[in-house]
Image (cartoon, rainbow, N blue to C red; front, side, top):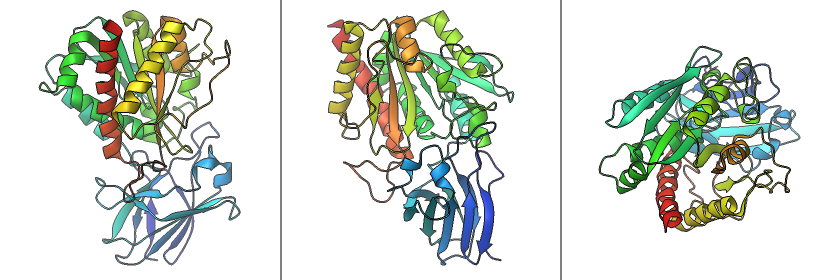
Length: 378
């Protein structure tokens, strides 16, 4: 046998069902104590220059089967630059099968649902940022697996801005976005950073779910809890991450909040708001609409045509963070969604939606926030 597949590492997830020649039949493991599965990340050892065929099976039972058509898997040979491999989906084959074809230049490559963001890289991000002048590190609490819940705070202004990401650990786009945003904010020469740090106190949680991230989960923490359904009544037993973050928010207050995510099926970048909260005000709604319009004007990677339906009046789910923060604090809150697929209206054939584009979007979102704050004060 010349084909080997391994996933025994940070955020690894795959089960090998069968290998015949250069073709492997695979299945994704479910999140612990949960039915969710969709994230995959594994290493392939194979002869250089020979086509490898990877068949990930059983996907009609995955969390979002609508995410597989028109999706191309992410591949890297150096774990730095990620490209897309030609992939096809057949819902009738073996319970729904994604077939990935790739010819490696060398003898080993990595395959993932999206470019992974490892816990080691997360610790590097925390270490670099916490050592910067004007940045305060806050350890909010501890996860069920014993990992720290990290928060970075900076700025001298009175507007309380919360940016938090990766409640759903398989949405690695969110921490790539965070890396781009943080690189902007810690650059002493960057005018966007200077403006935000002057007018705001920024509270940044780059990874809300370290346990799920390290375990290779799609959507849940170590206990199998979907954190973005815990914000109304978080508990130390099921959702210590949300409890710790919300407690800190209660201490600081929240004026503007962005919860960073990714969507499996929709090939677009979009935001979702807090329509339907009991205390909705026209001022809150206008603030949300104005931010969306600014971001839409600033970057062609953002759009407003595709997105989620709005909740009817009084019917918002207050267990979701955006709704809870808008209701609890009167904040202008939003959920930012990025794709696993490429953008339908602005594609990039080699990489598709990529870590590089996530990072650039992070900076654009901050620049839009500067303009939004200026408009609010006018």
